[in-house]
Length: 85
Image (cartoon, rainbow, N blue to C red; front, side, top):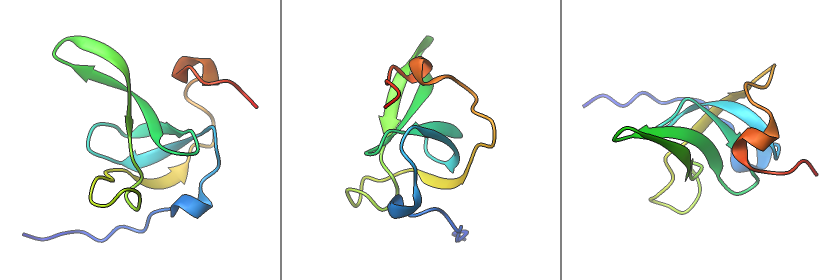
């Protein structure tokens, strides 16, 4: 098995309430809420908000590697059911 090493943004380098392109188990774009990534998930015909942990968080349960912030947000904060501070 060949594992590709990818440069990703550490937790300390993330900004709260910013959308990021990610390599993750179930999503490609998610919002960092300061603790986890929130994203829209489709599963068994249902669509709902879900969350995944940063790769470096809660080992071995982290599944998301943020690659870069989105230059233009894909969704408003209300889409993720979070409030602007």
